[in-house]
Length: 405
Image (cartoon, rainbow, N blue to C red; front, side, top):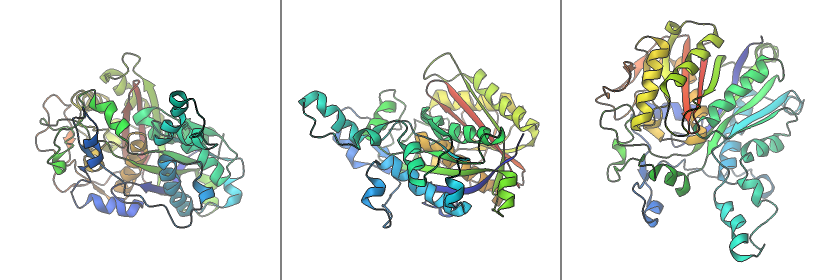
């Protein structure tokens, strides 16, 4: 089997628009949650909270660059431009046929749906353009990236809700590991929309601390009251080790383990047994014992059922009280982007030897698994291996393991 390394990173998030700025923001110990005025315009909404990325289109982008892109694809492109530049990938490599794209989101851009569906309401085609469907299609991020960078390799669009980003990274890793590609652009993105908030609001899964946005979400805390929706994008450039070594590329970490499985029991209620089996599968793929894991970046949405199932699954899989924290306590749930953003930050933390705390966690829920919940000012940990886990509607479970180089 071939070794797979990370040679480039990029992100768009409320924490920052570069890996360095995002990681530095973690040390301010203040979340990016705010009151979103537009949510107040919708009758029946319970939550008014969100986390915006504060994105501005780069000046070098032309109309031609973005004519088939909604916000979700533009976030993906901005993150990927940074990752490609950091990796030092040239046109020959990108267009070699040995470079592919694995990228996803929960859905495409939301506003174009109104134009598309107006056809049914008005029986007129005037609002539909040649780019309408391209912006809203579920594979919009992957396809727009492929066209922009003129890749000719594998295309793997991942649309598995909150595991879209992590599944993309995992699939990219396997394509390289088994010799089908040499380089992969991998990640996930999501744009903020009231429709995304509504999905969870009708399930009574959103936080209602509308007047105290800095106190929520509170993953794993006994007094947590739900999640907060965010937005952004995360991109990792994955590359075969010898290929990266030959061109003198900087390597940030090695991807050594990945596993995906499905609960097969319920589309929204998590299954701790299959979640635990997923984590164990990643350990087997990595060829390491559970005791080697020095830190777990948890999914940590701050929902009651989700936190309980995840933490008990983690404890069962690892067999000890592993250090764990949730990035969502800073930026909320970025849905299709979270798996990629969180994996990137976990790798950066491993290399820095410092791991961020879970904000707003003062009293771990006794129903949660017995783990070492990082709080306060974070934790200094010297470890060779970190694990990043994500779980999604549909019962989709993913686990990634990274090794320090």
